[in-house]
Image (cartoon, rainbow, N blue to C red; front, side, top):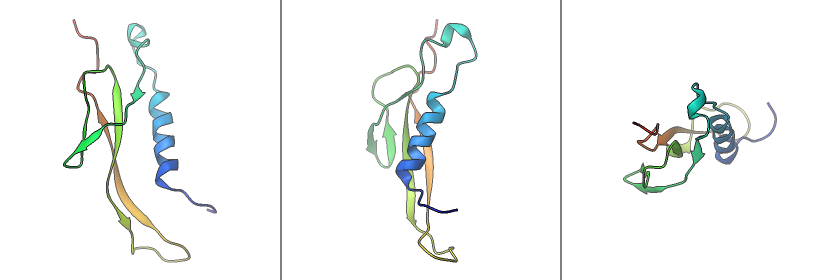
Length: 91
């Protein structure tokens, strides 16, 4: 594979995939997932408010990987999706 894949490219792909999710029930389709960057507290996303279906991406343990053989550099890390606690409008 030629070229470089960086964290920005991965983030944009994940955000696009989540935005493309269509809720199963017709009555929920008006409220789509929204990417909402948030502050961090001890490495965790602080999802402010109770916005419906908002999410943030959290990178952890990102650094050089020495399990790489070949040309160039490799990095490893963990990407988590943090979501607001409110998923539906409730009754």
